Image (cartoon, rainbow, N blue to C red; front, side):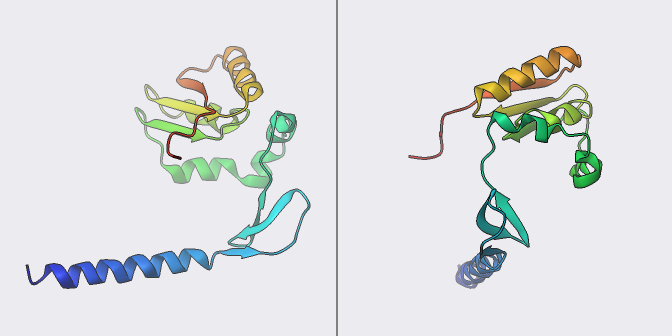
Length: 143
């Protein structure tokens, strides 16, 4: 019982320290008009994209610009995993992930019906399996 109090104090101190560290990563400043003037670790956060941005999501330069293969490598995806691609958009990442999960699943979640329609068409055309498109306009964690 005597060791519980110091442990709780240590936990509270570490939690506050980690919280304050995270706050330093965000900056508010002007930038590109397509952004929200909030920056995270030196990169401006973009506006929410609608289905009108599908061509940009599917641009051929994306691998070169974003090094998506390195991103996927660092995720260390293993066969059988179940992955949620929240804000899946056109399914660019979902399609790549579906080839890595083997018998697993990729739940591709988006709020735009047009994005889900595009993804359903992509699944047919590219004969992809293991992707489950989900239209989600609910906010189950917000009360």
